[in-house]
Image (spheres, rainbow, N blue to C red):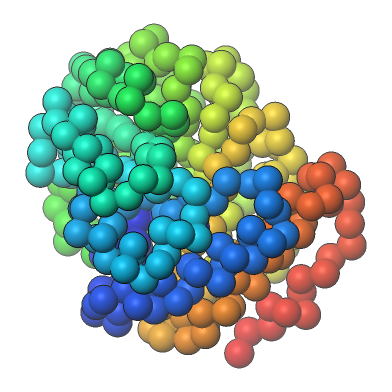
Length: 307
């Protein structure tokens, strides 16, 4: 999956790229590299949020929809979107008018910010509305965000209660204890769970994913983290731990030193730098098979020297 919420200011800087031309220039060579190196892997264009047919039309005008196999969609009508949960079918239909690509709901969720009963309702209603309409639904998320960790948004606490809802999206509390929604989680549904660098929750997450009978998991490998000391060891550990799941692997977050601005949402100075990261991921985890790739000597470090 290439990028995450490119039409959301938390994850792409509209001011630096108001028409998404830099975004298209970054994604196209990455998609082409993945197609060349891992032809059996389906390429998903990063989940749009909000759902916006005009944004999809713009990407189509750049030819970007021709480079991918699936369009990812995110929806949070009980927390952040300006539409009602029963409008899920209409929202999806609005995108079907703009593209023939299959739609995956790569994030759908409801917080327990006000009450756990709201999250239970959101999960049950989302399941009923989406289970027969799209091939893949990933519930966001497995864990609550620990209160001492920052949420990945640009404006943090200035967002008011919208920011604090990020901390209550999990089926499990941050200490790993289950909420009421665990009891109604359908085994056919996928999960989206982001892992921080060297995340101590990884092994517990695997145990809970097995317990919930999850087969489809969406997570990410951060382009920005690729430059940290020990990044390859952490990526390898994460990919090995999650090897049993049908994985949708999201590649996103601009390294500060490669961005037009020093921020994870900035367009990079050189679009081809993101393609280089996608190539490294494909070579290490898609071809040859992951078990062999994890024992291969490092080949990426010389290419990742900071400017």
